[in-house]
Length: 258
Image 1 (cartoon, rainbow, N blue to C red):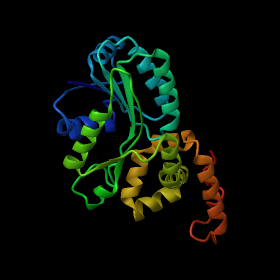
Image 2: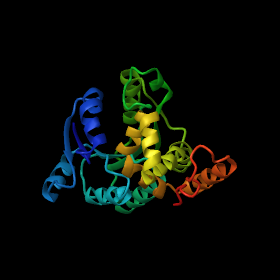
Image 3: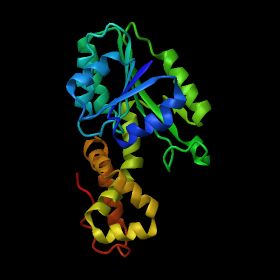
Image 4: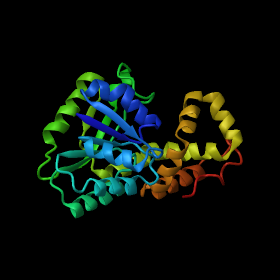
């Protein structure tokens, strides 16, 4: 079975190739990124049974729709695995494109991996409290997903100690992550904007400081793209106004707006 990772040169793409896919299935893994020629991309895309999109959040929906369109004439079953941290916009755009091309061999799975606080370490006690969030599927009539998704979910549970939940749809997923990830990302944005706060976080919480900087672009894109963030930012601003403002004097005007 051939698996193609779109964005394979990135941190998450490399992580999939090194730590996940070899333990998940017997497959031939290929990857493409923005430096791969169009001809090679198309050749690998046509051969792949599964296509996993791991590119940055900005431009994700457009790329995913382009991939659907490039696969519009496939004659063998092909499944796109779409894993952005903001799901709803991608889900709306991709399902509309799938409906337009109307190829019964083409299906898509929308999922957000959440492996744990320190990355992927299945031996961590915290690992079992984190889950992969499968928000939606879109099945082509001749490419059903139920059995395959169940098998992969079971493998994650037994091999990695990571469960998969289907409790949340794309919109609910984005609302919940806005109030969890998004709230901490507001702090991250402040840190990016103010050197004094950056130094303080680096000294007091070095792991958090490293995580924020490693995900700098993702954090800014998340704050901009998640449609529930205006509500979270309003709550963030309101909470700040209720404090005595003694701990970080001078930051009251620096809460992220938009």
